[in-house]
Length: 222
Image (cartoon, rainbow, N blue to C red; front, side, top):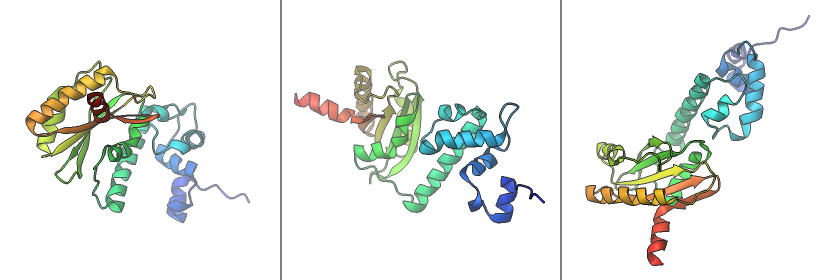
């Protein structure tokens, strides 16, 4: 007599979640397929394509997998972010210190892989401990001039002491444009007036990262 294959959800209940393969775990997450792709086929494709970059894949990467819609892709990145936050709280004691631009670049490493430009602000307390990370805008800075209130309103709300800005260059080049530098100088002036200084603005790409503060310092020295 041929034994009936146990479905992933039943397998969790009878044998434990740790007994599931990667593709079976994805099947549980996806719940069902569609008229063109069975859930098992979608799950196998999901693992094959995304396993090497599962921690960094974007919504666009996820929806490139046949059978994965935008709704499921958004659910996946939301769950991943939640788990990442709890992991940091558990293993880092909930305390993240951003003492240097390199610390900021390491903390925001996932920005490198986004296909759209994201401007992010890190709000720090007097001990340079991270209070919060917020996405300020999505889109090219040259096309979307950032209003200071988008950065400084949350800074005041959070009682932040200092701010580090960061954005990604999907092109793969980390060199700041003239618009990047001009916008940084403008926002730094506002921060100095308000007493909440922007201590750096870093640019990240797959190539690496660059500190605009270092660029400005080098220009002054030359």
